[in-house]
Each structure stands twice: as C-alpha cells, then as structure tokens.
Amino acid sequence: MKHGLSNLFRHRGLIQSLVTRELKARYRGSVGGYLWSFLNPLLLLLVYTIVFTTVFTPPRAQGADIEPYPLFMFCGLLPWTWFAASLTDAANSLITGGNLIKKLIFPAEVLPVVSVLANGVHYLLGLPVYLIAWFIFKPQGLSVHVLWLPLVLFTQLILSLGLGLILAALAVHFRDIRDILANTLTLWFFLTPIIYSRAFIQALAEEENASWVPKVVARVLDLNPMTHVIDGYHLSIFEGSLINWKRLPVTLAVAFLVLIVGYWFFDRLRDSFPEEV
Image 1: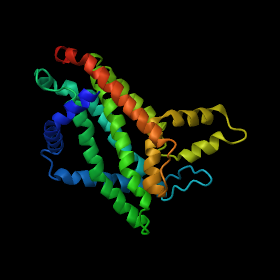
Image 2 (image 1 turned 120 degrees about the vertical axis):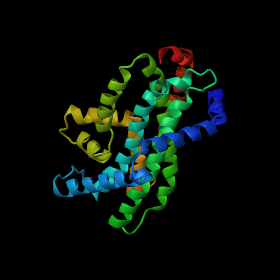
Image 3 (image 1 turned 120 degrees about the horizontal axis):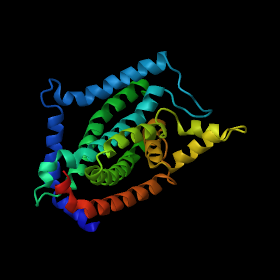
C-alpha cells in the first residue's frame, strides 16, 4: 500500500494532466464549455425547487428540520452524483484506456484515480451554486461547522478511490460489472438518506407498532458508509451543526481499509489487464 501511494505521488504530474484532459474532453465542442459545470447544477436545483414546492410534499419526521427541502435534498444529491459518476467512470477506465495500459511503463492505477478526481472537480465547481442558493433562501449565512466539510470530502474521496480500483479491476475481466453497477447504484441511492432524512427512518423504526421494514432499513442505513458521508454534508452545511464524531471517523477508517484492499486487489490483477482489454 505504501508503495502504491508513493507510486501515485510520483505520477502526480501525469494524473494532473489526465484530469485536465478529461475535463477538456467533456466539454469539447460545447458552446458553454466549463460554464455548464455551473449551469447544470443550477438548472437541476431550479427543477427540484419547483417540483418540491408546488407538486410533491416530502415526508417529515417530528423534530427533523429539512426546510427548505430543495436545499436539503440538493445537499446530498451533489456529492452522490460525484460518487456514482466516479464509480461508473472508474469501472470503464481501463477498458476505454486500453491503449495506454498496454504500454509497459504506464501505471494502470492512474486511470481510475483520474476518473474519481475529475468528477470531484465537477462537484467542487457545482458547490458554489448550492452555496449561492443557500444565501438566497437563508440570508443568515452558513455556520462555522462548515469548516468540517473538507473532512467529509476527504472521507468520500478515499472511499471512492478504493471502490473505483476494485471495480476497474473487476470490469476488465467481467464486462457485466457495468450493468450490475448501474442497478446497484440505483438501489444504493434509495438506501442513502438523500431524498429523505435519516431522522425520518429512525422515527418510523422507533414507533411502537412499527413493522420490520423500517427497522431493517434503519439498520441498513447504519451499515451504509455513504449514509454517514451524506450525513456529514447535511450536518456541516445544511444543519450547521457538529459532524457525528462517533460515525464519520469510523467511516473514514473503513474507507482507508477499502482503499488498501482495493489497491491490493488491483495490483494482484495488474498483469492480466493488457491481455484482457
């Protein structure tokens, strides 16, 4: 693992140039160019604001403050988009970059890392749109606890890198991984408190006559690492309160474990990549 991290650090210039190339390629031929990094989340926020203020009333738990709801949902939706796009692109990275990994001197692990980092840049470009909307809906401003945001971002980055390495290695040998991943991410999305609050599920599970379904869902939420990452975004930005120090550090430790296992697994299959792509 130490060798892997030092290898990535040694190729930081290559990673930076590939991330830049990926960002340029995404908007090549587009009139708006990088402006779409701001326009896409802005238009998405406008759509959700219209829908959830005029058409649909979101479920609420007693004591759970999720107003204004579009900001609550968007707070979790933006990082989830980064997460889902990172895993999808990382799973395809070795296949689409087959001409590169056939070169003996090219470090294959750079490709899934570039996928995660490029999508992370898109998230950071879209974040100001959310913050501007925040000051419009809540002019009192953000809490000082927003300073914990880098820790939440770092936790998601480490988790995404670990999963991205595993998926990239698997997808080379099993092309069905891409279709399985698409369906898994859909289920994972609904098992992560993005369109509903975590307090809402907990309130349902703690009701006196609660069925087994909310209890199982509440348990799954606790075991889902993205629950605590998204909860970190909600607490540090939306609620303006201290992040959960019992859960986020554990999630960060799990993320590092996933990264270690992911790099080990990737390294074990490295020699087979040129033949399979």
